[in-house]
Image (cartoon, rainbow, N blue to C red; front, top):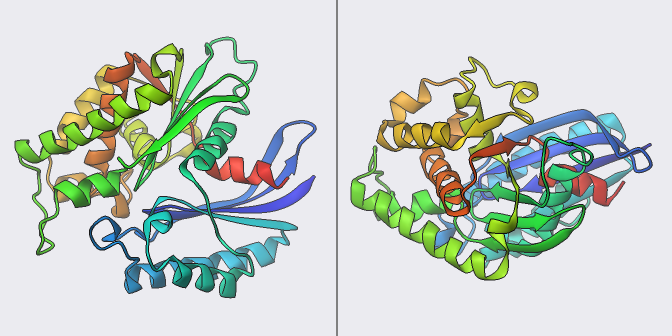
Length: 314
């Protein structure tokens, strides 16, 4: 066993996994898994820079994670940063801050590398499942981007596009003065839909989406939709992990999220406060992916890029 610490810093959240990994048995035993909404990507699509307050929220989470890693005595640490920090002109400020706090330099990975980690994390434990046909299509709907990966045991093709839930929300639902249309107007929903469809058209040219036989969905937008579909009164990772949600249920929930107000969404305990304003866009991404590929259901995984990062250093 090797004790590892993996950190995934995305556009909306930063997550930590401390685990004991055994490469011989493919067993990854969680010791600590946590997530903090930091909205690192706040305004990046508009300004091209990481906002000072977003950086401070992220560094505060890093200080908390450093204490957890020290407590568990992790032997190896890897910090991976994704969409927002790829796009920012002041990413050096981010790198320096993380290095000072955690003693490791964040690796600002490409979209394709992000996709490969997500695929490994999501499918490693699915090997041998007779009820799930291959190839898999793994879809990781993040804050800034969505990764599409098709593969069996290994990745066959992958591509990342900028249709994350935060990016779609800020691009189409937030006015220049910072005000948000809530619920969104039909023309705003259509603008989000057009962006998603254009991205799917591009992905189809690079990744054989329709050849996949099992759709596996990752990250907060998907797991939140699953929690709503299951009617959970509190977020329950064990219940959500490997649950299956039909297209009809995804469509029903997407319609409700797009027509509800902030306060109505916030009443649901399974919707994290940091996702209340972006979950409708994330659900729409998932719905349109299912329509595009003809998937009748999505297999929901709580294991994703974070687990893939852990395996990379095990």
